[in-house]
Amino acid sequence: MKKLTYLILGSALLFTSCEKFLDRPDLNSMVDSEATYWRNENDLRLYANDFYPNYFVGYNSAWGTAYAPVIGYNFSDDLTSENQQLALTSTPPTGGGGSSSSAVSTLSHEFQGPNWNFYWVRKANIMIDRIEKFAKPKLTEDEYKHWSAVGRFFRGFEYSRLVSNFGDVPYFDAPVEPNDFDTQYKPRTKRVEVMDKVYDDFKYVLANMRESDGAGYVHRYAAAALISNMMLFEGSWQHYHNIDKTRAKKYLELARDAAQYVMDSGKYNFSSDFKGLFASENLASNKEVIFSRIYDDALTIRHSVGSYSNGTENQARSANLNLIEAFICNDGKTFQSSSTANAKNFRLSELIKTRDPRFEATFMDTVNTPAIGTLVYAYKFAAREALTYLNSGQAYPPKWGSNTNTNDAPVARLAEVVLNWVEAKQILAEFYGGPAVSQGDIDKSINAIRLRPLDAEADAKGVKQTAPLLLSSLPVDPARDSDVSQLMWEIRRERRMEFVFEYARIQDIRRWKKLNYLNFDKDNYKRGSWVIGVKDFGDKKNPGKILAAYKGRLQVQKADGKIVTYDGTNDAEMEGFYVVRNYANRLAVQERNYLAPLSIALLQEYADRGYTLTQTPGWN
Image 1 (tube, one colour):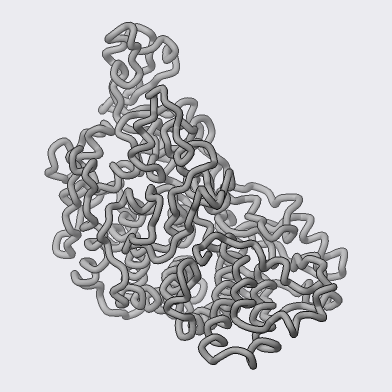
Image 2: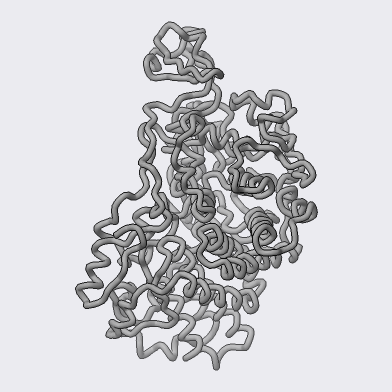
């Protein structure tokens, strides 16, 4: 079967002994067979299959949370929890390091990437090395270039993630011998030098990977889409963190060009609705999806993300008023200046009609207590059908309950590509002498997204497409940071609306050097939507009364800023912005929180071998 079913075969083909930090299984018995193993591209395909579940995670599988939306990505300035907000790291961990091929950062809520782990670097290097040593004479030129590109793509992917977490990391461009401790325990390589190597790998990929290699296998368009993500991250990091402006320009240009390649292909468009991207059983015909992870009940390839969006499962953090206020109104203006009727009404039932359609496709239109924090429940990753079972007395079908969900996951999609493209172009225009972003550029990116069709249910609810963004009349947003231009602010807003509960927001604010957004120093971080106590928390047996359980617990903030607590008698007064229960802010964000610290055990392991590994800056 050629679909992306993630055959776990490649790790059995590493052909070498174990190293402490490169995580290589002890398979010496296979060394002699290497020359006969690397016979043809089918052998290479089998070896490469092991990369797929690590890099094209989608919704993960079963109860897996790593890199999965809602259950893996639920930490950013968009979301607030009850009680004290989740703290950022304050001290280096004592344990952790390169001990498992599946290890995700132990600080995963902050750093959505791998732990200090070079298993996947080694696997990619083995592939590249064995192609040169054994397979090249047996391959056609096309096969040689394609599979070399596959190896270099995954090597670049892994180093991009490692660098995003740790900054400087040791760079390995070839397999390391088991007794070569000088190389195994080499010091960190400077970030810019590592990313120059990644840049070279990605340039090779864009020139040599096949444009199609069969259903479910990585191809040049998927690689280009992901390269645009990684190069935008690194280019903007280099720029906003003021590291190396020359390299920032180079990486941003590659982000732009990789995205342009996908856009110019004509293969992809915005012809399906937003909800269908995340709640469909089959994305094969969706023209916005460049690459997807396929789930199949018959093959027991399932996940649990849909169940965490079905209205019953707890969401530990939920959408705050700061995010809600950021959603543009459907006339293309902010709520403060919109002429849309009821634009300043923050009832969820009104917001779905006055805001960009992505709001309705992302959030339920009633408050829901499993959204622990603000009670604004995200059902972005479940079909509308899933909510019909809520409070119905019927059991949820397997596809929307437990860990047996089968909706396919978009891994790379056109919206990411066009937003990467326009942002890279805008940074280059503002700071590096690039041509100004034109109305035509906006029409190809932001406005193309806004023209997505509405599905029938959204249309029936009164949802409207959002008016186009016009350079001649950009929204005036009083919340805009003074150091961000009006156009860049709107580009960032579009990303925020598009990627709620996905990978992007925490990574975006890190690369923009805006981690201070996690200092929840405004009331709108501590509030949810507008609630009416007798409607949203009413006692069905006693009309006009709020359930007694909310006495002393339910609070609202009135329009004038006054906070009112339910005392059992003031039912009619309980109307206002929902106040998050027992809210307490996190410890203040520090400069060092942009990068992850290394564990004490890892530093000590180097020292025990007679080598020195430096701690991440600021964590000594």
